[in-house]
Image 1 (cartoon, rainbow, N blue to C red):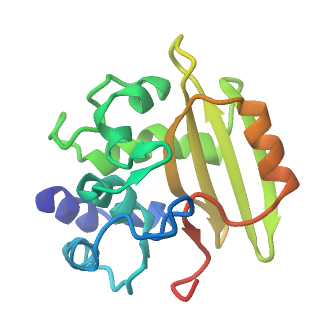
Image 2: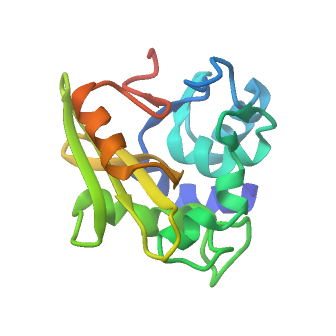
Image 3: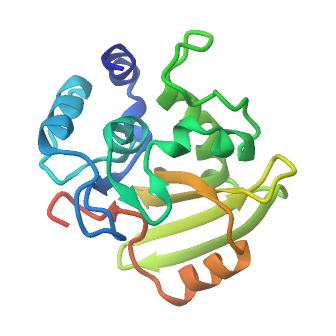
Length: 197
């Protein structure tokens, strides 16, 4: 994992991700410990202050260390079970901690999810956009396979560029989640507007 993080850092890939907190909005507690948080950000060369850090560091890599049970299962399940990868049109093991074609897990997740934030196309099942003070936020739901599981992709636009916050499998009503997103504008899915958030 540290080699993947170092490669991502060298190529500036963490810049495609926004800020996230490790305090889960469902459980109210941290999903990883401070020592893991610090070690991963140090490997990425990112100066972050617990509990707010880079969403790519935390979600793509940090969640592998999470033992916390949330109402939707463990955070690492999204990378292990293959549902998210399939919903994004990838092989079931596409987001595993492996060196697939000399790419990193973060590189593969970013390539699969970021285009949907930047330019949602006809294959998007549902989409919502809101304004949060000086920020734009967007959620899109896509489903590339025939199952009932969607990929929910959420991001924030910072200085004119979309930054991923998270992506995870979602098996509920796509239109309902977008309707709630638009009706109640706020930071969601562990997004943070700034390190002090």
